Length: 354
Image (tube, rainbow, N blue to C red; front, top):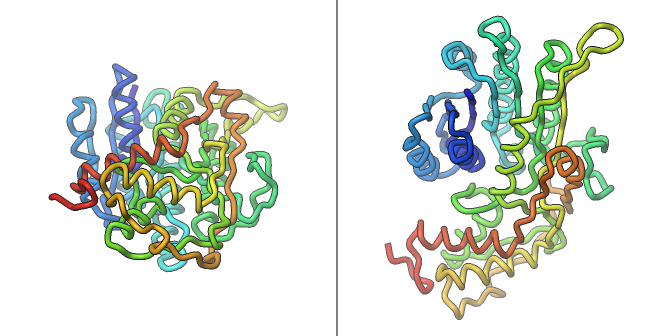
């Protein structure tokens, strides 16, 4: 099975590639990543070094917004499954650097769609399934919870959310026009070891070890459906192997082989409870000293632009179609993160030792 994974050195992408090789003995994987410095490239290099140990893995350094690179990769590798995880992530960064979102999330995704479209002319079978990352951000300021993929999502509150909704619309159009089986996955607040430093749990940890204050938005009254990375990857892995069925409508034209699913824990956690569990696990792992004064290092502040008060996934469709429901508890997931952080950055008994 030939699988193309974009964003392969990213948090979700690298874990997905490892899962593919662990569970598909005949897999050949090409990973694309531009290794940019949106966050510490050393983390990406570390993840990539683990992937390069697999005999069936080939790495291509480049940007999905580079049309020639994408076309050449499809022509030479002839992927059967494409998993597009490359994107510019983050709500707040989309306010200060919108160009990055247009380039990666719109132009880059368009290039992937075009390459899938032309794959049917280039090699036998072409792309059998395009899976791509969407986001819970598409739900915007929806007040109905839990969020269902049947809900209208026409009110994004950030450019990031707007680009992810655009991806879903673009994929639908290409599925209809060119009969490309595609599935969008709305991820809910992914966390875990070796994750993204711009995410709250990682950023909080970096500040706490420096003795800085952490800001908890909406005075701690936000709720997030935190989803452990292994659960996200399990969902992606199951979905990519089961493409939406191609069918012909009464007009003789294709019915779009198109689907969208939520992947979330279906258990929103209050931010104050979240940071309390985080600091407990950081103390337990030796990242913070046992006498750490947590109360002196937190500050309750108003909501920030682009954020929403709650995210909450309805995963009934995922359960129905794939027999899977994310289930890793926040305590278990943050324990794994804290243990990784202590080992990677060299903390013991609240002191940095390397």
